[in-house]
Image 1 (tube, protein in one colour):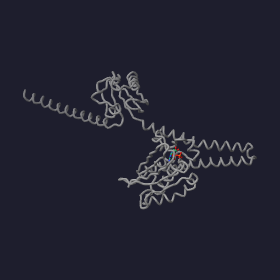
Image 2 (image 1 turned 180 degrees about the vertical axis):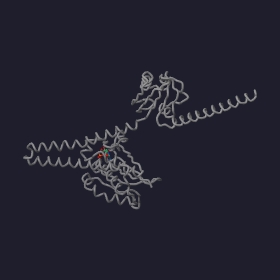
Image 3 (image 1 turned 90 degrees about the vertical axis):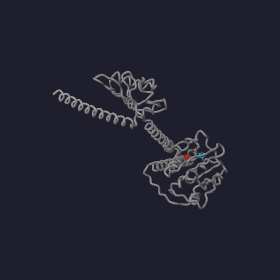
Image 4 (image 1 turned 90 degrees about the horizontal axis):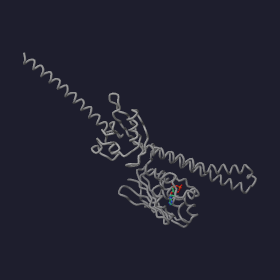
Length: 368
Ligand code: ADP
């Protein structure tokens, strides 16, 4: 009797133990799942208690703040993350028990822009901590700024010739039409500005076409030297006026596989610059160098060169060393960015070596 009662109790205890084990297992599994989710999140996640002691942080948060879980856990937030803006957000959440979302500029440990979402954690109706989810939006903001700058630049570039056209038309309408000699001059200026608008719009259309990811390259195998010979007549009169000699030193037998008309555009832009920014009686050489991975094409000039400080930005849209000079020479500031985009579409790279006063070597590579 006694024995059977004991056995029953032991059996009950055993099954309670099994149940407990199962629950612990489930809890552990849930915990592991939660951990895995946190570990794989691209957002930084930090949990602090009501005294702002760090209870948890995921690997992204470790990376953002250049810290480790071991050194952060259990310490006051500001000791680990010396950022007053986030500390202020945490204090507000802990004080008010409300969700707060803010965009913050962080200068430490690196300059970044973050979207910080902070939610209160409640236990039995009282705020017991704060959950921070930190999203790195630096790249999004950078792209937005670039787009804004681009629109501002385009508007400015379009506005300048338009303002001149309008000014001269008004002058003509106000009576200058009767002055035969002047009116012809004014019309010539108007014509130049209209040409400028046309070039600018063509360059913008080219750029937007090349930049649209869907653009398909029509690759062919062709002789580079023949292509260079074919485009020479485009420059002949300009080069002759400045007494510039252009030498095509590309080996006759050299064949490349690329989009012929796009490479033509690259060469036209580079050779055109090499003449435009050259000195009187200067020279332009077009030659190639074999690479293990493909071919390097160089357009070398004996012109003014480019100051070292401008070189890193020279392939940016609308970047010009001397704005007034570029305009005067009919430039749009888009030629080199078109070159860069076309070459990148071919998985090649572009660059420039230049010495002020001596000249520049603009180069591009085309992989095999
Ligand atoms: P642009 O229409 O002004 O020529 P690009 O994009 O072709 O525009 O070139 C950007 C700027 O780079 C030019 O305004 C000029 O200042 C500089 N540049 C380009 N090529 C040369 C070169 N061969 N020698 C000196 N400066 C150059």
